[in-house]
Amino acid sequence: MTNIAQYAFAARNKVIVLSDGSKFTSSDFDSKCKFDIFRFDQIKFLRKKIKLSFAQNFLKNNKIDIIFFDSWKSLEPFNNTIGVKKICLVHGNEILKLSSKDRILNSLNKADLVIYNSKFTKNKAIKNFKSLKKINHTIIHPAFIKKISKNKIKKKYDLCTVARLEYRKGHHLVFEAMSVLRNKYNMILKYAILGDGPELSRLKDLVIKHSLLEQVDFIYHDYPSEKIFKNSSVHIMPTLTTPDSIEGFGISNVEAASFGLPCIVSNSGGTPESIGRNGIIVKENDTKQLVKSIIDIFKTYKSYSRQSYLFANKFESNKKIKEYLNAI
Image 1 (tube, rainbow, N blue to C red):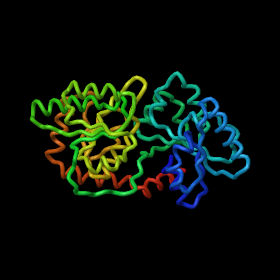
Image 2: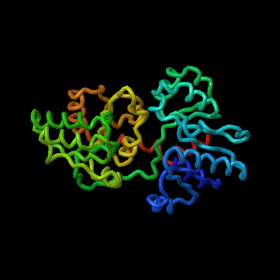
Image 3: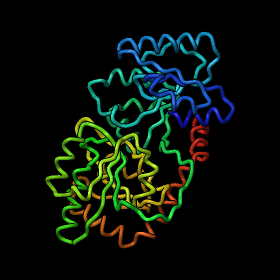
Image 4: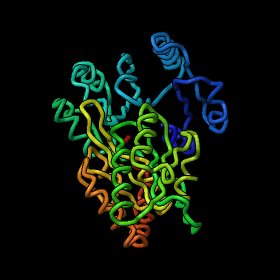
């Protein structure tokens, strides 16, 4: 959403953003933005009411052409917005919540345009909510690359994963593959994990179990991802599908490609759409394929790396913003 706001502002549009979070903890980020950001940090029940009231008053007193909603929940309470185009983003996980089917449909029916983050997400949404195919929609892969970064520094890490520490991201499968590579092929790899989340403690235990303490580094989630990409050779994210969670796309794979990193991903969800000829897609939850893909990537590394730059160029910021402008 921030990228959309930035480029809408750059195109000389008046832009305001309503966001959750504290204005104090976000002050550094907010001060760098040239558009206005209004933050709401009350408890959830109050926050929703206060933010809605603020938005309704703003709509009443200002001429607004377009509202972008980051999810169906944000769009749900908005009614009587005649003359304002409503665009809603759909990411993937929300379409799994069949218990909220009626609410989701009622909300998305208010949208003038629904933007899915991948072909997978669109197909899954229409399969679960058949009437969604009647709503005006498009697909835009939500990655914005500001700069292609070519560097020839010596890499500290062979593998890296930039992602939230959740079971479905598949970090544990990388540990299993690294253990096989070390014990069977004498291939000792260094692996950087950037992120935070509920799996941190379990993943640290698994590192000990697989005797990988000297090979795996956990890095604080607020550390710049660019520094990890610059110091790594391959980005790996063998995502899994769980009953209540799925990967709708995979932005970090595109970001990694902009630094020349080949990517290894699984065939789960919309993840395959986040790479091109710059990587390898493995079967979900298949350690043997993961081991083979790592070996193959390093055998022809330069070729995969060249393809990464070419793939990332498709997501160059100006090209992506044109996609959004053409859609609306």
